[in-house]
Amino acid sequence: GENVEQHPSTLSVQEGDSAVIKCTYSDSASNYFPWYKQELGKRPQLIIDIRSNVGEKKDQRIAVTLNKTAKHFSLHITETQPEDSAVYFCAAYGSSNTGKLIFGQGTTLQVKP
Amino acid sequence: EAGVAQSPRYKIIEKRQSVAFWCNPISGHATLYWYQQILGQGPKLLIQFQNNGVVDDSQLPKDRFSAERLKGVDSTLKIQPAKLEDSAVYLCASSFDSGRETQYFGPGTRLLVL
Image (cartoon, rainbow over all chains, first blue to last red; front, side, top):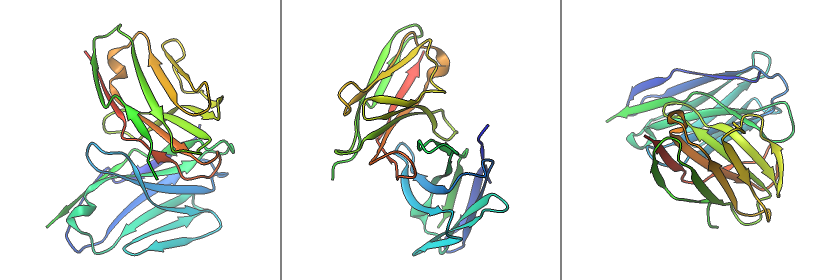
């Protein structure tokens, strides 16, 4: 079935360093890949997304890259700040057009001041 | 604009009891989703509505879970009877339409089954 694998499960970096989270997906028909940030006890919030006709997208300190051939996509956070500490989820739409999102298992990012 | 609203925020029940959750999506959003998020995992889709019709309920445990969206706006999710493994956060999300649309999440209902 459809599956999204996310690594690493935990990531600890020093403030100012970069953080990279990687995801792979199984459904070659997937063409939309959002990333959500979830702070403790709060709702998931969309931080960036990418569609399959684009290889890279950037928004200030956050960037996402997509490799359709290899079926993987990555989140890059530069100049990390303590407020970036949260759980990050990647997701991919399944092959149907009904909007079913398949989420990764999540990465807990800790930015140490 | 107002976000997705959910209630209650927290619920503690004993196993075999019933519980219901309520969701009010963003105004104008035709698609509504219910997700189950078990601690330490990503959200898992339980059911998706397009207006008041069910689009996908393939992962809904239909022997104990039910959901409705009668007027195509608010939705309720019910569990009867609850099991220990139902302890999770139940997230409601909505999007303007189905397909590759951004989904906006509510704050969730944290359920603990004892």
